[in-house]
Length: 391
Image (cartoon, rainbow, N blue to C red; front, side, top):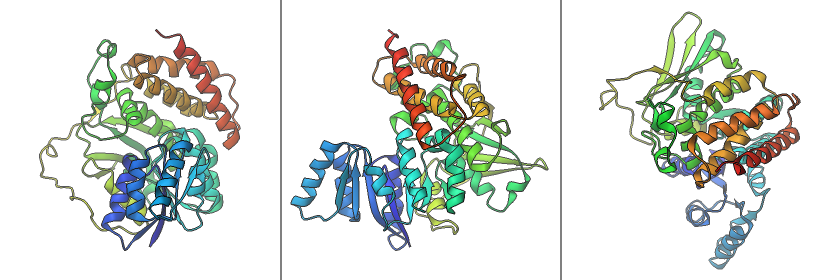
């Protein structure tokens, strides 16, 4: 039985992880849960799963939840504030931490969980984008498994599970193409948040959905795959596959290609990670190769003349050091500004490019938790300066 702490339990991945726990109660116990501020959802999760502890980043909301639980005689202990997620990540009762917090905020709790010797089921790509240079060696030193939950990286991992990593030539990361596949630069000039959030295939949170629309999501996944599988970014290709049936592929040295297929759902990647090294039971509708759309699979090149952040991610990935943390911070800041209606869609790209250019010659190569946090903070300040000038 796995004993889980779920960081970001009220988000999409967190909810689906709890769905797996709900359908296989003999295999999992939930020891810790956390959220940013959605205490109503967290309250319902606590009532159902009775975790030992919960965390709420918003202190006022956390105190409100703690009082509510106390009044009802529920014994779950509530931690609040900036370091609350790390408390849940380090819970002695947990053996596995699901890292499902969106963005850079997920890095430190995962770091703390590795130091505590927990198995990591990782959905937070920013952990490796910003900190892969020290996270992966730390995990190796501590004997900690990092098990990918991202559908693309789970697919790659499954294709390589039989020892084919020594024969690996290239990684082919698939992308749906997002809501603006086939559009020109001119078409993107007046894109609204409503249009950008209308993803044709996946149901995701706002930030990740915008990243899919700009294709930055693929840029982040390139750098994540570089760290997870020990290949250079130039051994990774982006393949646009709008049906979202093939979740990623690997090309071996003899030219053969292995692919992992399934419905566009995160349940299977979560299952694969949580039951590792075994395969768990089917807890959702199995993939049907005869269902509508599966008999018409298409693959296209990514048009980086339109989606320029993909090329930037390759460049940043080659340079390494602290620059990936800078790129990620600038992107998070710009995406939030776009969702708030402060800037246009293409201003996201412009801001990220300008911040990366500003720091390219000044950021050092020594990467650790403190230097990454400092780089993240400096990049956000620079991004905000640029965003204030946009009208």
